[in-house]
Amino acid sequence: MKHAQAEILREYGPFEGADNVHGVTFDGEHVWFASGDKLNAFDPASGDTVRAIDVAAHAGTAFDGRHLYQIAEDRIQKIDPRTGRVLSTIPAPGNGGDSGLAWAEGTLWVGQHRGRKIHQIDPETGAVLRTIESNRIVTGVTWIDGELWHGTWEGDESEVRRVDPETGKVLEALDMPAGMGVSGLESDGGDRFFCGGGKSGKVRAVRRPR
Amino acid sequence: MDSLITAAARALATGDPLGALKRVALRDDPPALALRGIAMAQLGDLARAKSLLKNAGRAFGPREAVARARCVVAEAEIALVSRDLSWPEKALDTARATLEKHRDWVNAAHASNLKVRRLLLVGRLDEAERALGEIDPAPLPPAARAAYELVVAGIAIRRLRTKAARAALARAEHAAHEADIPALAAEVESASLVLGSPAARLIARDAAHPLLLEEVETLLASEALVVDACRHVVRGGSATVSLATRPVLFTLARALGEAWPGDVPRGVLVARAFRAKHADESHRARLRVEIGRLRAELGTLAEVVATKRGFALAPRTGEVVVLAPPVEGRHAALLALLFDGEAWSSSALAIALGSSPRTVQRALEVLVAAGKVQCFGRGRARRWMSPPVPAFPTVLLLPGPLPGD
Image 1 (cartoon, chains in turn brown, green):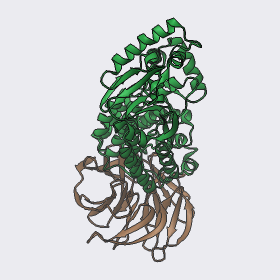
Image 2 (cartoon, rainbow over the protein chains, first blue to last red):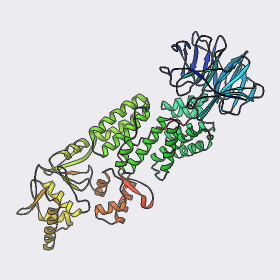
Image 3 (cartoon, chains in turn purple, orange):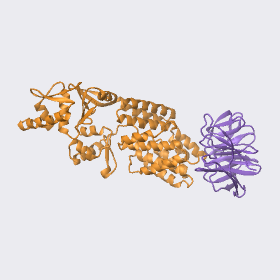
Image 4 (cartoon, one colour):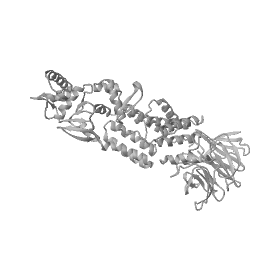
């Protein structure tokens, strides 16, 4: 397993009216993050908030190219980002113990926090297709170039780690600096991860290793 | 943090413990146990809350020191509210150190606040004031700020600094309003009532009228010679003569104070001081002795002059008034002593009242049963005090003992 220090490229926030970052996603232009009762979007170039949608947003966030997906209580809401309307909901696989959310190749991937699991589910029905075990608390989840990454945060220790999507084996881990945790995770499709910083109210850009 | 825990914690933070319980009622993982514990505490089931938090603290993993420390702080708060002072103070100190080490300033300050409340509860006012001075209220969120200001007010009230108490209560009200927790706002409001209700009675020239705490403060700062039946002392200017261990002398001083500027007949003094129906020669002789002693005690404050039919007080300056507890009657002297806000042991009360420890004990039991007095501690460590002092919110303001946030 490769082990390295996470390299923080930039910090965004804290943002006005959002003291907690739960889930994070990227729509190709803006970074979205869940702050409890809102989904907020900011421009990663300027760091300026561009809009917000009033919707329950307690954990992971994902984007499928057209819709936002947002975990609230024990459900996953499908949201039209233009209107902010909730189009449909499906049950979350962890019965509310769900944390991270990612979209990849037609399915949703859901982190189950203390269950230390990642579920692949059908985005129409919520049916569980596959489950991977992790050995740490799972926070954010993201896919990039066929790699599955997840955040973990236990007490003062937090990592961004790449796991084998078949076996759950840890392949690579980036240690976050002391006092910085990863509550949500999303890749920008390139060299950066966007990491939610929980109660710090910040979103951090972390370099993705090559 | 997971989704339902986030939702439950948000409900709890806005004063909706039932909403929080609804979301995590069936879960037994450590964060859920902790949240259930806090919700139960806010709903008043302290015994259940205590066991849930204990279980949560045990269940958190070795990497979750902060979460465990927060459970300890929450447990300490429950112990304090339920007057369980046998709860280990040391555990709270250790938890606070852990929180500070991990830069959780808000919960560390909350732990300090609990420590001050505990000191206030056991009547260690000086230590409480010192510990309070070490807390920086600036970074506290509104709910914790309100709790802090209630403690500041509690100390100020016991020190008879009503202006400071009023200012602290105003800040507490503002913070409670900002926190938007209705039960907390109600708590501040009920604490504020203390300043608007009679704290004592003023007896001057044989007439009595109620005094607010503020008026007591003004009175004590004035030139008047105050025969203080709440603390069994005589004050004049900056001088104070304690007659707490001389009940007969205090009774005489009070009788003279109530009648001032008139005099009191010997027969009345004998009846009040010795509880004798008729004054015979031996009583008169004893009265002369006691008046002589009172004269010596009062020294420079006032002269006790003989008149044709009895005695009268002649203060060096100002007028004479008697400050009496708001309610007197059976065990009133005991209540008056306890009203000073200090924590008394029953043996100290017995000395002050000049009665036997057993008598005091019996009286205290009657007063506790009537809800007029509180006690805490066991055996020799047991202490007694009067209850109506704020700074102990029945609304628990526990921090969210949650991991990874």
